[in-house]
Each structure stands twice: as structure tokens, then as C-alpha cells.
Length: 75
Image (tube, rainbow, N blue to C red; front, side, top):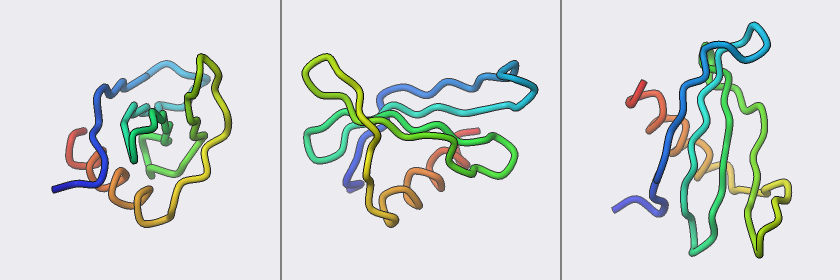
């Protein structure tokens, strides 16, 4: 079983001349969003959502790698 659950994924093909993929997911009962460049899946940004606010996310490297691999398989 995965330690996270992707709830939504958006492939944006018109973002500033750079295609991007955003995945919304839950990890340890916290909601997050992470955006990758579609071409090489390099992180553009990652956010944690709490009490109606978004803050820069500090995610463990292993979770980022798992999500990156999952996103790659989905696109």
C-alpha cells in the first residue's frame, strides 16, 4: 500500500511555454499539491494546505520520488 493517495491530477499543456503536471494528494492526513515539468518531471513547486491556507511543502525525498514515478506511469 502506498503511503499517499493521489486524488487529482492535471496535465497543463499551455503553461508559460512549459507543459506541467500537477498532482493533488494526501500524505499523513495532510493535503498537498506538487507540480512537475512534464518533460523531465523536475519539481516546479509543492504546497501543503492547512486551514484554508497554502504553505510551501517540505516533503521527504522518498515520497517525492514515489509520486514522481506514479505520475510518470499515469501520463
